[in-house]
Length: 397
Ligand code: HEM
Image (cartoon, rainbow, N blue to C red):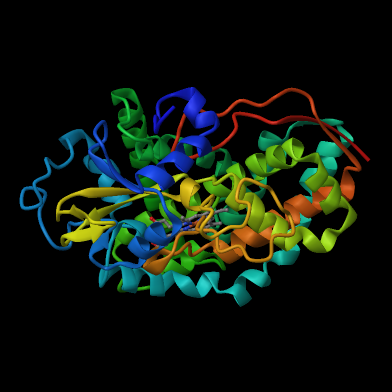
């Protein structure tokens, strides 16, 4: 089977197809999406840092000038929110937006959140083990990062249940060639989310608290759209992948019981284990870039106006970089995985994600001497965002 992102068998195990791409066609044109697939680690890493490519082209050209049709009118509310966040803009706007929020995410700032993250993880895991287990995703993997990022931003308790469904619907647009109903769901979610945040920001502007939304309302150079776009981005990016790394990570450990036993026996391996779980089953399989000036990769000329699809899941299994890449090795020391990206859009939340993952894996290892799979999990249908529907476990101390 070749690269086939709409085929459930490919989604379940894309790594064999990636091996072939890396060997035989490290850069290849994929007709169904009109994108150039890039499969090798060195190329993915280099293109993420190459300023001749961008997450957007709208800072250099209009849709027409770029030879692209532009989005249908009904999607306007979606793009208005998404393009106001730092992830979908390029310098100089990116530099300004990233600078304004990066203070809240420095390793030192984030380290000060560790006791709170530990307490939340501890109480979720406690409740999970007390009732003998259940769906790890719904009971531990989701509520931990959602609570952490919602507390940081100051989303009231009673509204937090809204975040997951909004985020899930918005993410539908990031899959390849989304179906019309998925596009409409994403637009609806983005409008509702933006409306909610506009109202909350107005309240905090008048009556600021200690939270990040209050702090952002005090920054004069931030427009209202930018404030809303920033909050949507932080709330979504701030939990979506972490949920999936937790589920995928435990599923990886169950498929490699020797490595789970090794981690149980030597807890100092937790930091390298978290990095390895992110490499071995990559939570965000692909990111796209627009080609702003002609480039050449392995003798293939990719002209301005093209789109490249950088295959993170493939880069993370590249034998040129990782020794024995298909082996899960929780002690892997040399692990330059690409799961947090590279270059100017490198994940702002990486230090926070690492703390959340270490605390939740650590709490489960501490509290549940017995953790067993009740049934084989199934993958959600999306290819780009890789996650399990549920992970049913039996847990006991
Ligand atoms: C394991 C969990 C996570 C993974 C795998 C992950 C992965 C990524 C990746 C690959 C990018 C770059 C996308 C690109 O270059 O196109 C990114 C960007 C970003 N991430 Fe994360 N992320 C995670 C957790 C978080 C958390 C907890 C936050 C917290 C707020 C966060 C906030 C962001 C933001 C704001 C950006 C945009 C940065 C920019 O454009 O300059 N992420 N993330």
